[in-house]
Amino acid sequence: MRSMGDADPLTLTVEQLQCLPEDGFRRAFCEIVDTLIGDYGETVMAEEMDFIAEGRSPYELATEEMRAVMTAHEHWFGLPQWGAIRVLPRAIHA
Image 1: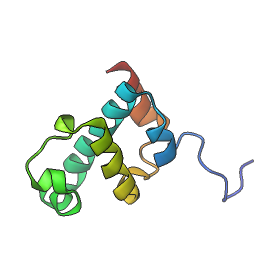
Image 2: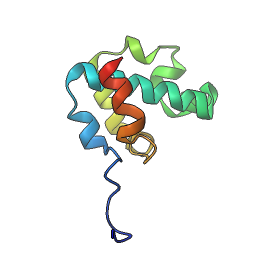
Image 3: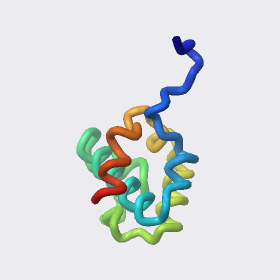
């Protein structure tokens, strides 16, 4: 039985997302950003992330830009909803 302090094994941390192979990382990043925009709206996310406010698609960003955005906005990318079941299959098999 897990205690309340145990991490959910299906939850991906920002560090784990950053360690994905480049293609998987890029797919996961775009999947998460697309989901955030779908869930919270483009206006809200544009207030949070400059590249969205600039009208840029997450797919246009260089990998290093993606990593910088993820690091700067860990509170959005570290949510439990980005668990292995939701993100990894799409990131790996897209």
